Image (cartoon, rainbow, N blue to C red; front, side, top):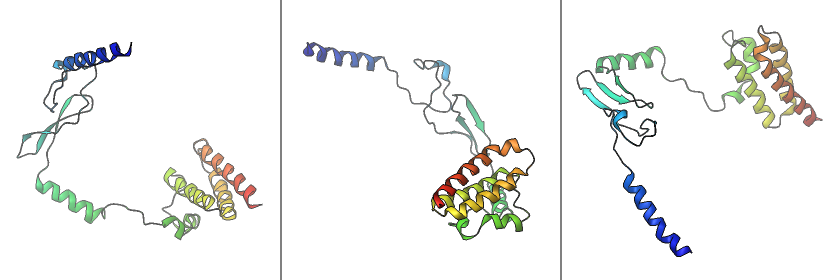
Length: 181
């Protein structure tokens, strides 16, 4: 019984391999003329094709299979953009290691006028500070930070937006109070 199965398997595999049409895609290929795609665009990664070396224009294929002409950039434009990024914008923004544990962000909230609690990013930094205190098992400090933050968040306009954050802080506060006892 199994001997017949061994003989059939290689034939089936060879027939399937013969039916496969393997093509190497490029950005200039048109997807409709390729057979056996089952309605899916060619998902292979392709290299861009240079159209004009002077302007830097290239043709690339998007993930949908359509081709797109990407505009080029001269070296002068690139140098201007690069100098603007490093001179005016002061380069990439990076966060120093341990920035959250060196100073209390709740104190920064009172002293720094740019630290606006109505912004979600600022609220997430404060909630992350509470998480760090909790996971480092500083339950009393975490409970104080949560209480302080809950009272500040409850006074915000549009409380529906921050209700999930308030609920999360209340749950963390309950856990801190049970662990510190």
